[in-house]
Length: 127
Image (cartoon, rainbow, N blue to C red):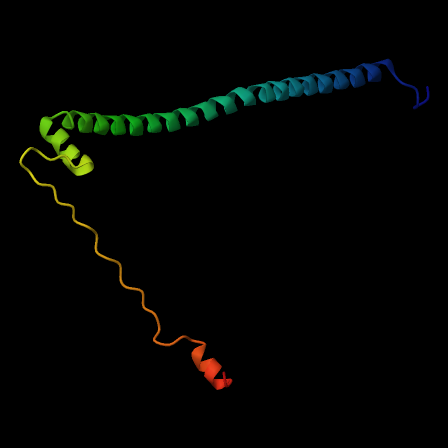
């Protein structure tokens, strides 16, 4: 027998090694597919968690602002506050009262130079 002939036992061993190799390659491929398939939901879940945290912070800010506005609205329902706003914003006066308007201070007068800037130039040129 020559050494180049394939022995049936060698074929079985090679085929067994090939099967084992293909089996692990298949397992690896399945694991990779599962990981790729699982990455998207995990990423989506993490994004949703971050967005939820942001929205909860916004809700807290809006609720505190809303609470302050409700307190301000309640305070504005008193007759004293209504009168104060009417006096400040709309010039309300009661009977017998006199209204005075205080004008703002006059602006500073415009400062004009005593001579026109080109007068000296005209004199120098003989004009």
